[in-house]
Amino acid sequence: MEKMEGCIMAKVKITCDSTCDLTRELYQKNQVSVLSMGVSLGDDFRLDGVNVQAEELYDYVEKTGSLPKTCAISLGDYQEEFSKWVKEGYEVVHISLSAKLSTSHQSACIAAQEVGNVYVVDSKSLSTGSGHLVLLACQMAQQGMSGAEIAHELEVLREKLDVSFVLQTLQYLHKGGRCSGVAVFGANLMKIRPEIVLEEGSMHVGRKYRGSMEKTVLDYVRGRLEGRTDVDARRLIITHSGVPEALLEQVRKLSTELQPFREVLITRAGSTISCHCGPNCLGVLFLKK
Image (tube, rainbow, N blue to C red):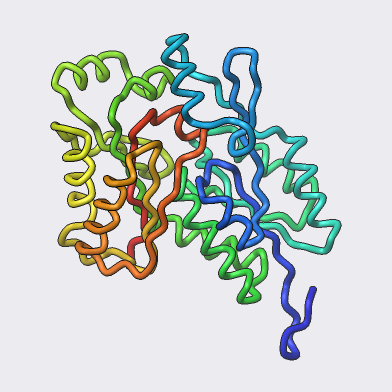
């Protein structure tokens, strides 16, 4: 514990999975400790955010027709990470990928019970939906809130997340077992580019778009932001899996024209998320009031 202006302030360490898709600079600035998911390209095991790039995944799929396998973080890795910070006098708040999408959350919970002074929050989200919660948790920790207080507040805020993406293709979700071959065939036949919306920790198909990827992305942004009065304009995160810079700038400009966002962050999806969404995916992620 640390003293601050006569009060006792908790030492809280924020940790998360690499699937939060924030930039290395944001993690370093906020002193967030990140645990990496594993990615296997055949017999070649890599770590998300450490030694594998999304382009390598796409090349692997192109050459083999198979999807790289993503590996959940192990119980032992969580135990080691949590113990390290608790021994240094910290409480730990860990933000995990949705429990409905990975077994990592369950492993984190078991490790937390064994180590103690660790609070695991199911983000019920993925990518920078979880990343939003990480940044908010860091702000709360800096304000002196305890681990329990931060975890409780995050469980309220996660219900306000607006998380969605528009995909160039359903092939990657299909290869990962998250949509049927019939859905892929229909989308390809009709040249449909689907929007994927996250609700209660699970993915569902939202609107369906047609046309070029540029037109689709801009129509998607309008569909998510135009005319809404429930958008929390403090922060927007634009996350993508290889969209051209010129289109990213169009998205940034259009988003701020549609809503008065005070901060806009642009991040690149890591290898775990890219494994499932494929190339040229883009999402605008924010909180609702």
